[in-house]
Length: 291
Image 1 (cartoon, rainbow, N blue to C red):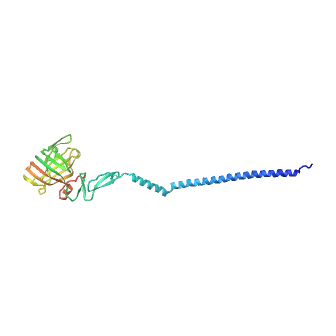
Image 2: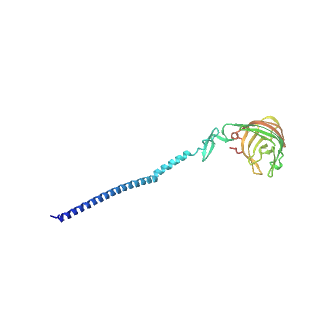
């Protein structure tokens, strides 16, 4: 019996070992290749994600985009801000102007404010009527403690609002005086004055009559320099003065029953006009009230 050649067996074993090694290497190689491929794919995905993050960051920090966003926000903010003039009603011949959050009515060119209305600078505007009567002594002083009052009423309308100034007795710690009273004024005038009440801004009504006129009826205001005034007084606790004028007489007639050096009794009726126009006629008036 012939035994197998030991060389063949060794060769077969070696060949089998080589095949096994080759298979293991092949498997390892394939496995490593797949892992490498997966790693490369993962690396690609990471790079793409990183690029996307970078792009987003760049967009957020892009000055052009930031400016655009800011402009858009401003535009939205401006659109949301309410126009103060949207619900503001202004009088005729005026325009609403926004001053911050406030709406202000400003008179158009050629007009001025009077009692909440805009009145023409160049046209006479009648703003009321008046009737007055006064009787009393003519005081040579304006010192309240030495004033002797008279009697009488001043009834008038001002922009369709009725007023009635009558006898008023003031007696407090700082002032004791009675209205109405007559006193000698500058320019040879006798002024009879009423007020509505004593406060920091009392209203007054006065009639000015030249001291050289004689008793009579239907005495024309304009021809004889007679006029009435309506306006505001200032009072600081001691002194009373004219702050501003709201109306002045236009057409009017005066009746003088008595006018001497010491006594006056008069009555009058007429129209009240805008003081700005009266200034155009040459009236020498105090400051004109604008509210």
